[in-house]
Image (cartoon, rainbow, N blue to C red; front, side):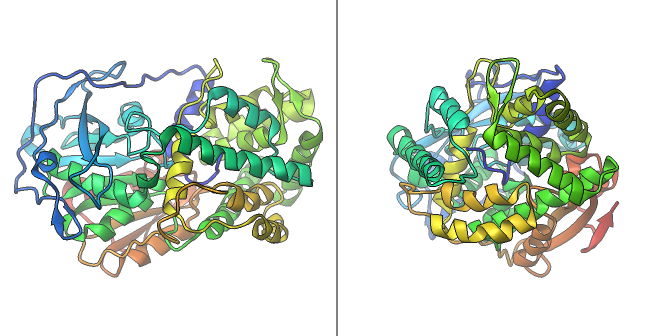
Length: 515
């Protein structure tokens, strides 16, 4: 079951590139080489768990940077040990995988710049080397660093089902159930997913919260030798950045939050925000192709209704059903440069009666390769979301949302209303909080970048994040444009302001606008 919220921003762009034949390498477990360390300009304060200092066995770690399988030249990998449970910091540990490319200008080095690209569940070890060309100017003076957060991929990654089980669910489970039988199958699959997570990943499942990942970040900051954490968070990475700033305001360095999650929203609030955001992006797409948004939306909704009863054939023998088609429509809305794929996919479905391109985009979004293998991102994303949130609406509450959500969007509303209940249905772990807390009084300025046409994290969330961080902390920069994320989305104005802040400490005026 794909979740539309907080998909990894750059991985969507990379996946679309694969459709045109562009390949990118991944990284694997590190091979140890020489031990290296970085001496900070000022001593790095020891990370703390509440009032207790973490044990020296963790804070005095030396990272063994070694080669990364299939990564471009210049990238090195390492692992860092962190407590499984920060309430018992001397107990069991897990290892987190890191990747780094050292600053080109070592004589003017500013320290490490840590990246999280979203999800939750995105592998920073994979994504940062792929996306590094976007951040070349920052690499002049920063070591570019990312990691697989706890519960993700190489870092005690959560696994919930087999490839065959995932394929069966995509083929047989209707994500917008219309009958009692379809609803029973929908919630039965949701419950089975949670039980699969418990069966395969019980040890880590209670501890994959965003707050624990923020604590991991502070330990990584100290082990990397940085007195303050310089951070670039995208999509879900903004929620993580806000959480870090709340927990460790005195350790906040130069921080950018781009494509911002609304920190005031619970599960229903997020779903409502996304219903509005994706419909807004779809309207803008339809206008760009000369269509009336209302008529164009109705046409797409009618296509999805037909697919609910009669899926389209594809060249690999699978069927494009309603749920997969919706995912294929969602994916290109993340980037204006990808809208042409949406046009092609819809045209193929309407005129040729086949679903090859929409299915290919759905497969890319769902991280399914040509051999039918899936990444663990969907498992990690769901595990982190459901460990975070106490807000688990019931089936009855989801049904009650349907009329208002359908009114907001005939295309996306029904799916997102059902998703509020199905996503964490009968989850085996109790959620930690109702919504994130981002108050960070005492921190330095944090640059919050919101894009007016962002479908996945609508612009309004950036305003709310800037307010939540606190007066004098949250600095709002508005990007008038389309797509999920501004810095990598082609805005030279945003790039100039972000680089000026990260490299030279020039904080833009609060309320600045790029267009």
